[in-house]
Image 1 (cartoon, rainbow, N blue to C red):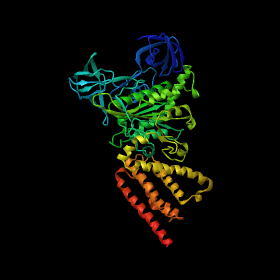
Image 2 (image 1 turned 90 degrees about the vertical axis):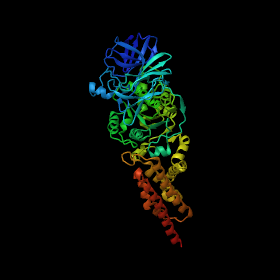
Image 3 (image 1 turned 90 degrees about the horizontal axis):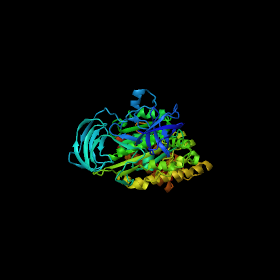
Image 4 (image 1 turned 135 degrees about the vertical axis):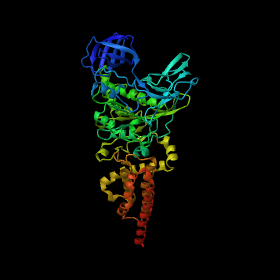
Amino acid sequence: MDVGRIIKVSGPLVVADHMGDARMYDMVRVSEARLLGEIIELHGDRASIQVYEETSGLGPGEPVYTTGDPLSVELGPGLVEAIFDGVQRPLDVIRKQVGDYITRGVEVNPLDRERKWAFAPIVKEGDRVKPGDIIGTVQETTLIEHRIMVPPTCLPGTITEINSGDATVTDVVARLETADGIIDLTMMQRWPIRKGRPYKEKLGPQIPMITGQRIIDAFFPIAKGGTACIPGPFGSGKTVTQHQLAKWADAEIVVYIGCGERGNEMTDVLLEFPELKDPKTGEPLMKRTVLIANTSNMPVAAREASIYTGITIAEYFRDMGYSVAVMADSTSRWAEALREMSGRLEEMPGEEGYPAYLGSRLADFYERSGRTICLGSDHKEGALTVVGAVSPPGGDLSEPVSQATLRIVKVFWGLDASLAYRRHFPAINWLLSYSLYLDNVADYFREAVGAQWNQMRREAMRLLQEEAELEEIVRLVGVDALSARERLILETAKSLREDFLHQNAMHEVDTYSSLNKQFRMLELILSFHHQAGALVEKGELDLDLDRLFSLPVRDRIARARYVPEADLKDLDSIEQDIKEQIAAIAGDGGEEDA
């Protein structure tokens, strides 16, 4: 282990000389306290080191120890249900060792070396295997089968020995004979966090990730393997929206990265997730969740690493053939860490002080998403979907982080403070948001939900856009200046907003809507619009619109969102009520004319 010497300390930045053998992104230990750091710049034998712990008290002349390895994560059984900090130190283990606050220089193995796992082999001696092949499984939780794979760095070879039974993550479970000799295989891999894991082929984004959130699934869907951002000002519901996605999205594994957000928000996650039940299995959601917590009171430099730590863990589960969702909250805090380190390195600042490479770093992160054919002989298909929250100061979407993110991602869920103030949640503005996956996933919705799904979605969006235009007229001259057809548009759009797009995350039924339920709700709203519109077009209702809009069935349509999934057949009677009550009004109108 080579030893350098500190010559400068500037916050989380430490500069050391005599580091001639070091390489970019090597992991180092700083001072006798052995603080964890990473080399981020080299000039000759002088290295600039990003330190992931508090550097107060360090001074020139103290040693820096190089390890020769890049900053890496440990991948194996024990990841699910765990909570790590930004550099994959398990916070529960640290708490047992040193208390509620992380002590400087504490060294803890990310994966428990003592715990034994029941390894069940699925290959036998003499079998040929190659990188990515599954050699055995471990039942990590009741929901997740952890698949032990041949590491991507191995050469193809023949299994010469394989064991079964209880083993730790460092025990040898198999031996592989390759052209380079015999390789011992354990249940644990190490992988550099800044290097994407390899795959065989990237597939198109043809399958939507169903979230159970009506405004997302019906209007602005995200594909499995896709990218999305949720920008919005303080208090507009970014964190709750991401919590909803983490709880209900049909991803098999969720990696939630709390990057620089307030500690009480991560506390909410930790308290909520063990209590919440997976809608498909009834098990706690925590049994398929990995948490990375690097909150605002933790070292700023570790925020930068936390994003890469989280997505590397997600890629590992993707390689097993799972559908994985990464929730990053928020990339703005990550960008602030980049800006601080860039300033201390005295680099030329870009817009608003952010480094000139902000856009390329963001792209590096988001481009690690995708639906892929994984390595291995069995052509496993995995998906890695990334949803990043952005916290622009004052809700200004023209600031650099928001703009750089929008150039990369394909889905934009724009949160609107005015909707949040009106208690309309999720506060996603349907006039500003967009999804570039609509055409890709149209066939899926047509086949899986209903032939009319895409047409109904387009009609609903058209009604909401027409409402926005009509509201300008109403503000100027009042609602009485509108025609009967225009008043019907306003009424239907109001129903779309309040009965369909508004969703109560705290209500046990309304918190999640299946695609079938969403289809039926939208069908009811538009059915009323079409049947009422037919009367309006005939001119049978020149004046009595108020009676039409206050029909009892309107209240039943509004309450359809509280109908449990098991009772969706009850919605059939609402369709019948619409026909009967509108027919009754038409009959009354006909008698009056006579």
